[in-house]
Length: 218
Image: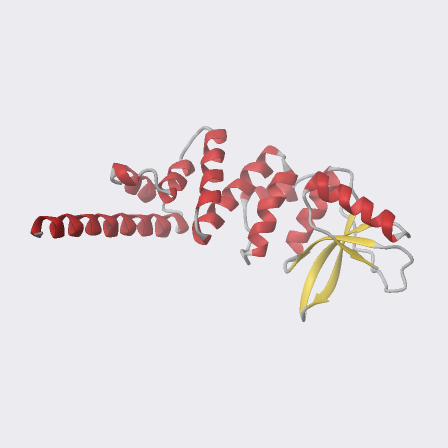
């Protein structure tokens, strides 16, 4: 009986120690103290090296971008909210750097839905793309055409990133500021058709091709 209690205590202590190490990694990572993160990785007990936390921080230092991306994807799919957001940021940066803007926008939308402020290297790269700037064209409720809303953001910068991404696919979009649920949001609109069904069919093509949720606006 005594030996069983000792084993349980040892196991419990080991788990507490591992969690403490992971907490230290989070803190050092958020403070950009990457040397300390490396040091924490090097002393992590081997039996915890399959944990998502270990796999995430290990992937940060991988030189093979494809391997790192695969690790971040695995972490994104299997982790809780905190680690999932960190993995989503890494995946967004990876796809932006590769020029895969549609894939990047999926993770960007996830982060926005989670209320995460996006300040990423990938997002900065998109700003530098030579895409012509278009001023928002105010629309009125008397407009004869329908419009397709494919995004609504609390930050204008995020809406602008989606407009630029769509521009790379030769899709013209504009930003319209609207008040939704008592919040000012920057909405991304595509021009639809005068007929609702034609607009709806076009919106579904956009949804299928670029995996963007939509709302028809009149």
